Amino acid sequence: MEGSIAELRETFTSGRTKSVEWRKKQLKALLDLINENEDKIFHALHQDLGKHPAESYRDEIGVIQKSVDFTLSCLDKWVAPNKENCLLFFFPAKGEVLSEPLGVVLIFSSWNFPISLALDPLIGAISAGNTAVLKPSELSPACMSFLSETVPLYLDNKAIKIIGGGADVGQRLLELKWDKIFFTGSPRVGSLVMTAAAKHLTPVTLELGGKCPVIVDNFSSPSKSKAAAKRIVGGKWGPCTGQACIAIDYLLVEEKSASNLIESLKKTIKRFYGENLKDLKNLSRIVNKHHFERISNFLKDPQVAASIVYGGSVNEEKLIIEPTILLDPPLDSDIMTEEIFGPLLPIITLKNIEESIEFINSKPKPLVIYAFTENETFKKRILSETSSGTVTFNDVMMQFICDALPFGGVGQSGYGRYHGKYSFDTFSHEKAVFHGAFFPEIEPRYPPWNDFKLLFLKLAYRLDYFGLILHMLGLKRP
Image (cartoon, rainbow, N blue to C red; front, side, top):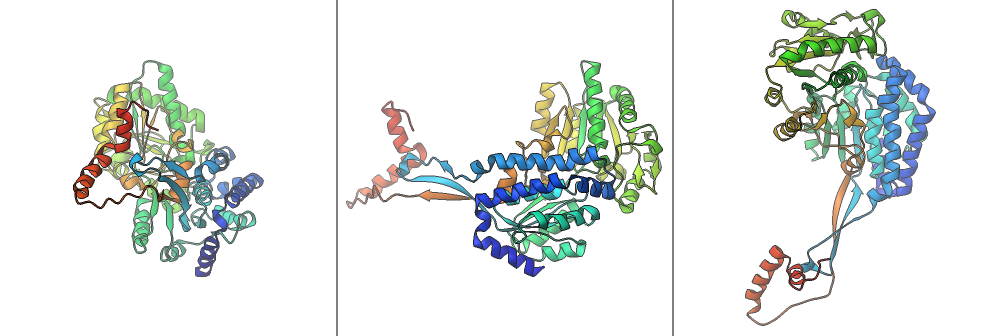
């Protein structure tokens, strides 16, 4: 392992990865990897998680294709120095900001989206000009094997390496010195990563999770209510059957609207996925027995079981839990205090929907707040009075695939951001460059100069001295 890291550092020191041509070549090769191995990816995702090809393309393959295309179209602009205006007091000096790669980076990916959450950060690392080690999750072994066998066939093996293995391998990697660590996973493991990184003062990006709420307001028309129900069902159970950091964890709605919403959710579930456990379609399975038991144990609490209004059936042999809706489970139960990360949806009723703000603020900051509402004043209150990684109005999950928006958490839901330009920035150092000039050089010798200099500097720093003169003369500032 140490030899591999030394080779990566030697490659980075050579300067090869700083070439824009090298970066583009690697990104195009990554696109070839995805396009030429689509069936293998489908097979690996089905082996690990039971994903349907349509789900695999939507959440894994398509995400990477889109991300590579976007990065290639923008890379020349991203790497170009950004000229920055300095005070005219410094004329004729000028300033700029130059993005430079950090060095050798370590990427830990997660098991729930084992292709996209591995390769999407890698796109950022490559585009910024770094060398990288990718450690896939051992909980998705087929995808880990695919990446370990396939990536070296397409990408520069002296600059990008895949290291498989279990938690012991991850621990060994964390003991080494890196220039950046990017981690996707649970808050518990994220704290271990941050602790290990602190030893070498290594910067980290932590993409974690949390209990993401969805607020459902009242609507002016039945069609909008139905659209909200469809998007909630698709966003809760569609991506890896709720095993997603940005999946809806619980729902907040007014008491008077709860019954209609539940009926609409039930109808949509039956239409999307089938009516009973044996006939469920287009749903992933729970990743392994440990996680199956963890989710099933939520339902073993008698008070929680009594709150089930739809679903609740499980198949331990096939690791399947059907979409399940619960109405007002106890707020101090495990299902309402721990991240569910599965196909259970608690619905909490409120007297007034605006109470949802206080409810959300009583819990750790979520990765995403979803809100279905037409009320612009309520939207402004949500934005100004809550804190979360993202706020998404009147849709679910769409923020994740928008390259123009940063993706990341705040507080316990994560630290740092990526996607699109933000991925490039995450794996770059923005170096400030000041180009000074030798003219004019002023050095008065007479004694009153010191007092005059103090006054001059005060004016210059506070008012932009030369800019003020131009303004007084009626001339436009450049």
